[in-house]
Each structure stands twice: as C-alpha cells, then as structure tokens.
Image 1 (cartoon, one colour):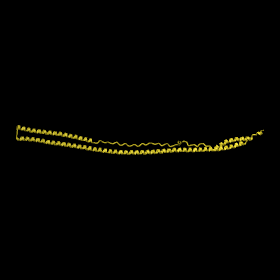
Image 2: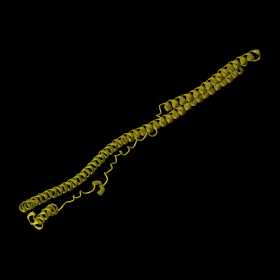
Image 3: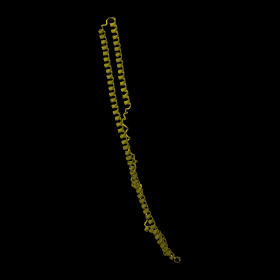
Image 4: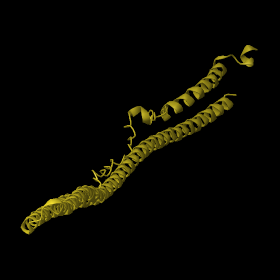
Length: 297
C-alpha cells in the first residue's frame, strides 16, 4: 500500500522539476522580451528626438536661405532703383542747364534789342530835330530874303524919285508882298514844327512797340525743374526661427519594465509542488504509524 504513494511522490517530483524548468524558461523569455521592448522604446525615443532636432535644423537652414535670398533680391532692387534715380537726375540736371542757358540767351537778346531800340529812337529824334533846325534856318534865310527884297524895293522907289500917291502905292504893294511872303514862311515853319513834333511822338511809339515785341519774344523764366523722387529702400520680410527644443519637448524617456528572476519563478513552482509532496509524505507516514486491521484483531 506504500508503493502507490512513493510512485505518486516520484511523479510529483518529476512534474515539479518540469514545471520549474518551464517556469524558469518562460520567465527568461518574458525578461528577454521586456529587455527587447525597452531597447526598442529607447531607440525609438532617441530616433524621434534626433528626427525632431534634424527637422528643426533643416527649418533653420531653410529660413536662413530664404532670408539670404530676400536680402539679395532687395539689394538688387535697391541698386536698380538707385541707378534709375541717378539716370533721371542726370536728365533733369541736363534739362535744367539747357533751360537756364536758353533763358540767359533770351535775356541777352532782349537787353540788346531794347538797347538797339533806344539807340534807334535817339538817332531818329536827332535826325528829326536836325531836319527841323535846317527848316528853321532856311526859313530864317528866306525871311531875310523877303526883308532884303522889301528894302531893295523901298530903295528903288526912292531912287526913282517917285512921291505922292504913286510912291505910297508902290510901298503898299511891296509891303503886301513882303507880308504875304513872311506869313507863308511862318505858316510853313509852324507846319514843319508840328510835323516834326508828331514825327518825334511817332518815333516814341515805335520805340514802345519795338520794346513790346522784344518783350513778347522774351523767354519766360523756366524756374527750377522738380527733382526726381528718391527711391525708398525695398522692404524685406522678417523671419522667425523655431524655438530651441527643451527636454520636455521630447517627452519622458522609456522606462524598463519590471523583470522577475527565473530562479524565483522556479522556486515558486517548487513551493507549490513541495506542499503537494508534503501531503503525500504525510499519508506514507500514517501508513507506517497506524495499526493494521490484523493487529487490531
């Protein structure tokens, strides 16, 4: 009756050994999986961190390239605008210089023309006065001739010895002729004087007309041409760099999962098996310590 218990104990020991080995192997497998998962999580975390840093570095480089291109484009536009401004300024200065020279030439011509008009007026007035003086001199000469003729006539009358009414009549005729001649000469001189004064006034009017014509031909003062508008600096876009990463941007680092010693797992199995073997051993002891039925009889 003891043999079945012994066999059961042996089978229990063998089974406990197998279970202990299986538990130990399974725990080793779980520990290896935990370590592999930790290594994977750590590598994945590091790769994500490196990818984020590389992405930021690429964004910074891209911003720097864009800012550099923006600066080169703005510099090109500024240089082109400055070149166009200088060209427009040269054209403006050249036109201003031409206008000033043309205006000065017009002023010189105007001054020369008015001076010439003044000299022409003066010469015309002098000619007119000279002619009037010649007329006056000729008139005085003719008047003297009339007086002389009257005196000669009076002398002839006296030389003939005519007296009485015949003499008076002869004197009256001579005096009448002299008076008529003097009146004609005075009227002629007066007419010549009036004509001369009228001619002098006409000369003045002609001078005024000539001055007006010269003024009408005079060029207006061109003044100052407007300066070309100075170009403004080309505005440039402002770029903002992405902020520098902090430790919290990458999240917490992976933590290795809890692992159990394979020996502890095997010991746990052995503990359960030993309790079962202890029950079998108790039964065997009872068989040896308890009286048999035959002894009881």
